[in-house]
Image (cartoon, rainbow, N blue to C red):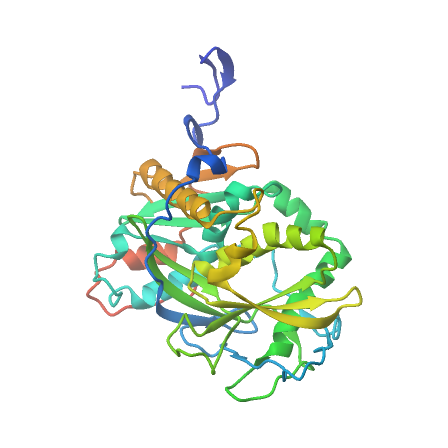
Length: 397
């Protein structure tokens, strides 16, 4: 059989792809928001299964050592006046974005807890495992107009794993990121430094290094429709004064945005940025987002708390706004699409779901490198007898 050949389908002449990239042109999923208007789907209140930390060298630790504590400035009516440019670039240590981490850190946690998961040993076999950020992109897809995405999917021991793949456009954008955008990224992390302490009741220390390798991640269980979910997301801080000390309701998300002075600026903020804030916080059940609004000089002039469950009110009467039901219905539809597409249980077989604004979600089939993302150390450990004492190797590939 030849590796490439021409064939006629639906009146068009197409070129077949090589054996390791079998296109499935009949499979696609539309993303038009009008198709997903309807009642809000069932979404199980997220419950935290556990957590893990990544240290200054990006090494995994199955504990909460990287957790920080919300420590806002006194509310005396004065501007916080946080200098978000302070320390840049001298005290900035960004994570190496060339390293493809995929699901590895989450898989380390799964290995450690595979025999003790809430829901019983068979629960994982029916679940979808992914990062919160991947689900966030799905929620916002019906309203996204600029950035496409790619999600790789593999089924192993019944579980469906979803891992984002950097698109060529996103890679080109990252490699040519202008200095101003790099500084804006630093400002977001710097704001966290001004707002967080290392222990409850402690003081913040904005004089230290901003190291974006360090992270505290919550691992959560939920269900969207009939899709059990196990996902993890980075948590900015915990509020020691929260009404409930039960995670995730005591967690706080921290954000920065530029000051708004006109109705047009506010409308754009509510339509676009607030949608992403809502999706990111609603999925794990984080109740509040605290935003620092910065002036052109990079100083935080005001703080505002947005309650996650009230964000939709800002666009409820905007006919060009977003609708939470549309977001969640599309996400549920995509998960069904993925579950029905990825039927073969094989960790080396990858289905790549691709989407660009204005187009439907399409899927192509791949095998082995460079698309396979479930590491050998994970596949081998999960294949071993589950009754043996869990042993978590370090990621090697």
